[in-house]
Length: 230
Image (cartoon, one colour):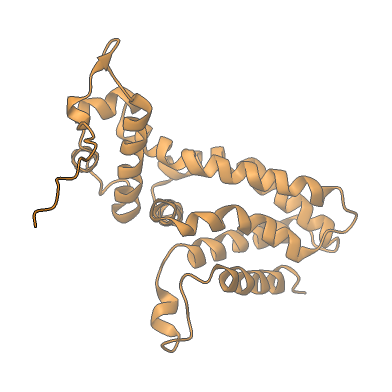
């Protein structure tokens, strides 16, 4: 017996979308996000220098001219990709710090969790994991690319973490506090960036890459031990 044909809604290709105004495609915000998504994955895999705009255009199914229309240049695109998520992470951390800063002696474990929790949700999606890889890779990019972006996204919140850590550990001088926050950043970037190191090291069946609670508990214990060390 022949099954009746299923009527499916067809989505028009990006190349066939109508144009509203001077060169602006209909559904522009969707197209822009699709470019950002494609760039996020490719930049995270190949780095800034190793990523040609042509490959991003092909992945997003747009022209390179359209990428230039939205972002101006390759660096403009890279900047938009990084700041899209990093600024939100920074804002969430600052919100979490407000409550801790009012405490006379905030707990170090709470400081660490307020730092980690805004990025945990990113591990739940393909795009979020790509961003975490991109963020870890940023520290290997040339300084003229990485310093300004890192400072713009996280400069303010990082200084606040140094201050609240010294409040929790009053015997810690400013230089040591800066070192320890730097180590905290390095630890989480590596642990959250899908390096697959635990897949290789842990006996089979003991490690679950999707066990977020185990991840945050392990990283928190490690960080607290380092931050409180004599």
